[in-house]
Amino acid sequence: MASAVIHICVAKKINDKLKLNPKLLYLGTIAPDTAKILNQTKDTTHFQEKPHDDYPKLEWFLEKYRKNINDPYVLGYYIHLYTDRLWTTDFINKYLFSSFIHLKSGEDISLSKSDMKELLYNDYTNLNVGLIDHYDLELSLFYEDIIYPEVEISEVPNDKLHLVVDKMGVIIKNSTNDKNYVLDHHEVIKFIDYASDIIYEDIKSLLNIDCEVK
Image 1 (cartoon, helix red, strand yellow):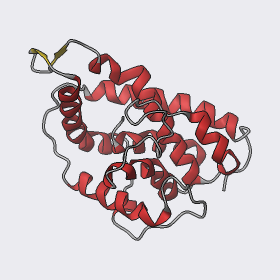
Image 2: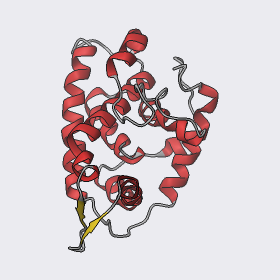
Image 3: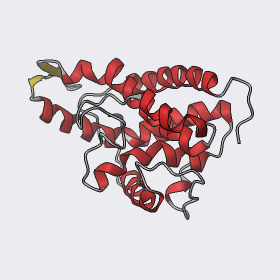
């Protein structure tokens, strides 16, 4: 799955066009990751068939929440699921299903899939500072009182949202400028731009293109 900062970058690019309440949109964009904080499998919060298939079923989410899709929080949640789906199908699997990985140091090594995931997770933290600067993210959501959404997504109860907000604040605070082992900063930016364009086109259809969004 993509990192929380990558999710927010995609949401920010989309919101540059939609002009929604950014705090509610970003809150929705990180809400699905509450599962890992509560030590639960993510198949429920990510609308997946299995806990580890990393492939959200967007149609399942829309069947349940399509009527609320113009709410910034609900739309942010949908953006998270769609980003994870694209991250899995169009980006990260080229690393996870390779027998050998080519490190940025020039070294080729062989890793198990679980070790590869851990290596990529470390890269996520090292990428954060550069991505926050590149997309000029406004992150007051993580340092101010939460504005709770009017619409509740039952898979992530509103009274648990503070947990993911607090966790995200810690992640940002502890982000470093260390070198990445595998992921190229520019390739991740290309993915974010690619994903935001695809998701925005889908959202235009969901919102009937010119309908007014609250």
